[in-house]
Length: 519
Image (cartoon, rainbow, N blue to C red; front, side, top):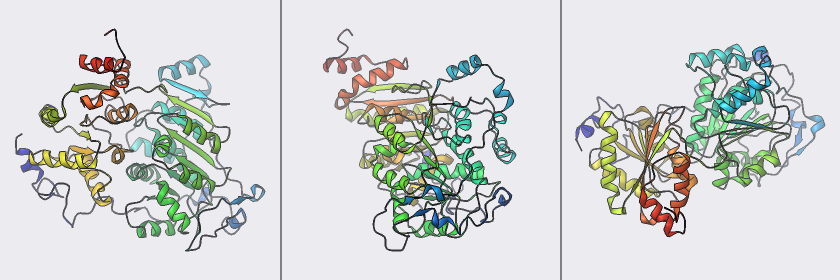
């Protein structure tokens, strides 16, 4: 490969945060651009929207908490809620726009069919087709227009009326569908209608996410849309020191975005409480269950008043997620975008390359050369192990490619730095493991390379879905070896459903398993 990559990548004039000769390392003076968890002033500008007096003084009578949140705590116990003493809160803000009301049932049906939308439950609100129809206050609409959004995505068009109506809801949509905005904007409206926080109060909105990367991305959206209301948010996740997070919580924040494990730690040690939470979001619920967070989720949700509004978002709808919804959502309504059957994004071209393990590196160089021929296109490379991720990163950097690795063995500060370099385009190639990439949302990834085939077809679909988002197109290269032959049947089904080219040797693998005997 041409060493121009090396010369430009390591040039301090071109890169304000240059790396040294050890891959994935950085100067000690480097500070991530978002080193401050929360730079929004603590003074609220929405006090006129808060109507309850003496809210905090009487709040301790709402429920009996067995642990009283001292510094040394036994395991969390479920509070004994006295529903008759809970102060009422407002959660229904939706007034249907006249333009929405005037549409016929046939028009609504056609809109939903056109957008592959299915709804379930009692009295599901009609979808909106523009931001103005959603009924957001002026300060929210202004934020939307300033950020240059043109029209709502399908999950937003149906999700906003559902969320603003105060109902518990389930939203099923693929990653990159715009679901974060679908719950963040109603959350802003919800917060502005509640009493101001007082000293010792926990958050009003709690958003649970499976990974720190996703949690940080959600916080960025909260900052964008909460700016005009000066709504404060903080991100609580493991892998970093607790001190700065504890300080943010003690200062008071309206929104907490958290991974389950670190939040349990904060609750158990009395660093925050969930007495004020009236708007709960479970994002990527299926992933949280896949990662074994169900016990923590149940402990956390048990700490929140039962009449809260709960919004559950997931890319899939397995039995475990359905059971969680039945246990914690009341009379919920549901919207599904797309098919619940496992399928790949049709905007992604899938290229399957049958090869030996020893051929992978040469194929990788060849594919990257073609990818970068017309510019530095962001490329995400998946490996099965941390060791392979490091080995491939070292191999590529020695060949002059601007590549960095991210996986669970890296420190949080290094992971943040790698993500910044990748997002900014300073390092257009990132090598990642599945766990490190969960929740990762970078909108302009053009290519995905499966250097190692994943252990299941679900992860394959999830990986290639990192490209081709928001109606753009993308390409996914996959290196498929003899060791992966047991996945051939499932892969063929995905390729056939998306009308993709299928290598003849893939059918040979499937026939060896007793399938596709006619081919």
